[in-house]
Length: 623
Image 1 (cartoon, rainbow, N blue to C red):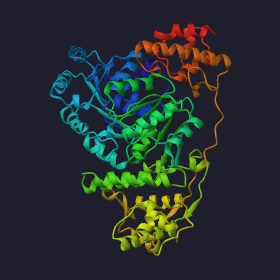
Image 2 (image 1 turned 120 degrees about the horizontal axis):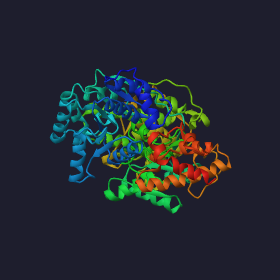
Image 3 (image 1 turned 90 degrees about the vertical axis):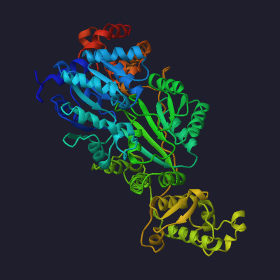
Image 4 (image 1 turned 180 degrees about the vertical axis):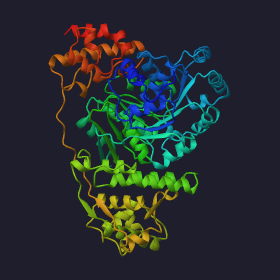
């Protein structure tokens, strides 16, 4: 029977298979549209429930005899966990990737061709091979190819933060299987990236579903970088002792150093970067997903597809390349909807490094200009004195009001006019270059301006420069803030080939003439008010989901978590794939005595009730 947009089946599947009473946000219209055979581009924030937007149509279309759904996914770990979660819900799913041997691969392919698999996960490289395409041809000829779901669709765009050239070959899906519906999904894409996704995947006729980018449970904080690792340590100890978190660093060495420092301070931290052996990377990722209270210190090689719901903070010790990257990475915090923190330390060197990477890249000038614009938007967010969330959402074209929850809303910074300081800095750079014929770095220029007679100043006779000491009223942090903004706006450049020396640009002229004002936030160096220490259990930090439970409820919740951990280890899956904390908390609160008491609890579908109901009742009965 053909499916229609008014079919009640998707809601039945949501309730019976996944155990949720109702769709969230825009899920219902997306599911109805795709189930009925429409193409879609879905932008939904991390934790918004994107997977259900293709999983439910896949199940519905399979039940209607329309065959297999192929899910294009870039990560092996994500495939494994998604397929495991579907198996737990009683859905036939499989993956094809390098972890399978030849015999296992052939078995999955045979099951796919027989129509025994509802969702098949595969990487874009495999989907576009002649062998796989011929198998898709066979399914299409028999009317057994139901849907293509392209996850992490921003990877197709050169303007995105995680461009993967292999995604470009996915245009073959439209060209070769024009009658098969496609849904492309991503958590992050500005207007330029969105347009590129539409063009590259030929989704011009697709309906676009753009959800709010707001993650109200995340508190955004950006601090001036001083002693970054010490600042991070203080942040974790004050705000997130015992919590799971992710710390992003730019280099592999920095990852190793920071992870070791955290371990030395008694924090359960692990390193993750592309230079580690693949088996060790996998081991660390598995520990992060399966154990509680792990802090992963990583490069951006880590994170895409990480579904761990109870990550309580994401910290950046080095500035990302753009707002999309920042939003995607910070979005890995608080997927469960409970309060979480996005914390970043940044300084002058971050600005210098990011500018240098763009300028030295082999890309064309058009691409570099776009990347500079994206970096400028991120720098504007970092230097902002108004609401961070308003700025962040505004970048994605979404209007909002001050959130009352970011650092600027909670502790508004003072703003000062740095125009005079900027003009004096630029004048000093100009006069030093005139006198010496060579350029110098930021530290030396600030010393001259502040009137410090260092050995280097005396060596070059720079105490005789006319601007020597005329900026003595400015502190070093103030001048570094001015330099950050001048470099960020292009009024000053840094020559990486000449020991990061400062160079005047065409944009310097307007500032020197006083035509371009330079307004800056005061440095906010006072630490955030320390939160009351939470009671810790033997299994790490308490779950926010259980915060409202009474003493007996807390005991049941702890026992249920212990039981869930055992089941997860037996199944080689993260604990949240068995049941989320919120589901365990609801069980603990209800204190069920019969299987009927478990029905209707969010997250308990038919298969899970059958598989785990008796065990859950046994655990609860012990209290």
